[in-house]
Image (cartoon, rainbow, N blue to C red):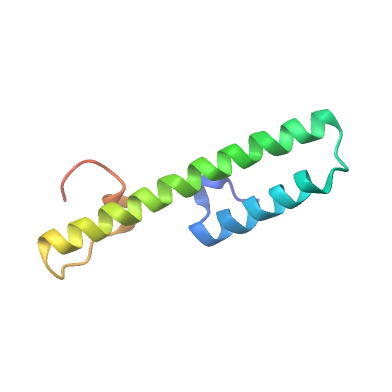
Length: 80
């Protein structure tokens, strides 16, 4: 089983949607709801980090011309 850190944006978004559906279903106990909520927060944070990395990648591409910038490199604050 992969961890949140290994998943791309589409996978994170799909998992987050499933968590929301479970929470909105109203069939979870309090403990299950809290666990699902915590999972959702983690997924939302990962999604936000991926979007930030993509934004930095676009900014680097615009600033540096047409050179390719790996997504992992764009997600750091260090210049290429």
